[in-house]
Length: 558
Image (cartoon, rainbow, N blue to C red; front, side):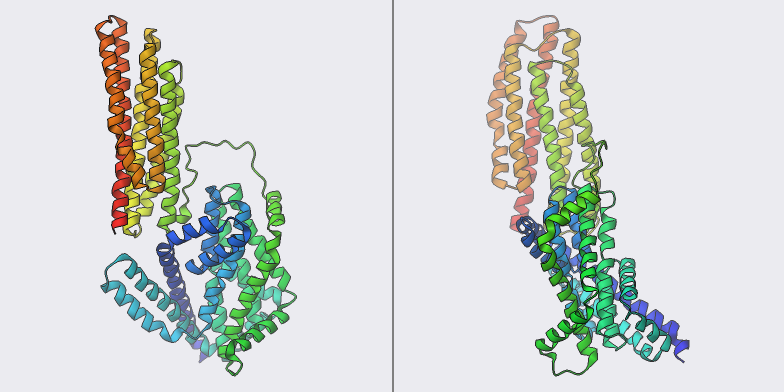
């Protein structure tokens, strides 16, 4: 009879696993969205040394419920230059501790709450308004799916307790090598050590495997979970690949340390479980899952304590194994900070966009600086302006494509405002680059053709005005980076002060025009055009300041 029902059992098992995985993905996505700002602040403040890095890694992973996700985030931070490799080593070790929270939660008999969570979470999400409240109900719904998936898997496995072929397969896991390979391969295929742990705990709750087999499969899961970070590091910077390798080395070395001490680990887990108040319970369906979860926690905590002092040698080893690639051409047109792995975490993704906007601003600054030099020192600098403008165009296209992908998912009110801020700022900077490249490069070529130069007094005045504009650009870039309303308002007030300088320059040019003739009139026309360009550049800078004020005002007022 059992053989006839194996297909149905297999479907039930896969359905349960599907509910679990989908629920876990929904939970991870929701927690990343609701905790994105907290993760950013935590990473900035707690990765200054390896011990703080361990704490940050454990906490972030507990928040997002996935060591793979948090390690992928680290790969992205390193590729963007926001975290050093030594800091990443501590974070990765902490991530392994954080992922044990999942095992601890699902080791309790929480499946009875599955339908309650699905019902309350689903109805709350459908009926309640407000982004954060709806996200909270969505988290409850995701937890309900996770628990319901475990319920289905548990029910599907119940008849297998008397199926000899299945029991023989389970007995093969008593071999450490077989169990570790199975756990690693299964985790690599699912890209979720939490899913593997859930199945291990379900098997243990039905008496299909014992503590020893559960520990061995968990060791394999720790190796298999490295595959996600390794995939994420492909095509990234060298240090990002080294971070993924640190994850692999740490987990493999940890398994190697414990593979000969699984008996001792089982004894320690049993003792800890009994000390936790379960000594009077005789039901192995309750005890073994708790013991497996405790063994998982002990394994990762002890490994971190063993290897935290070896972060230096581990980093040096990865530098030897993954060499820098000499001779590769680099181009600043390619975005440096945008990372596809952060698309589902809008707060962190928008932080990266802000860094790329900063790169645009630095190029506009360099273009204005070269334009000021061209005024007083004519020469073939128009090629430099063209190169910088090409870089601005490349960054602009990539930034806006990235923002489009971020906007495709659900955004909070503040995240939506930031998207509009960055779209507007990037557009204004790109326009400024076009204006500078077109006007000043053309003016420089016309002067060369006419063999005339700007008058020394005009050149000095205009150069000073352009440097004033550059100072305003620096201020607005700082206001944009920190969304500093007060600094943005100061930038907006620059119109009156600059107008005095521009009016004085225009009066000077009118005086020059009345006493000029021939080709000199053409040069005066170029000088007047340059003055108007400086005015328009400052007007666009003030528009960026207005964007900062508008978005920050709605943010603080919400």
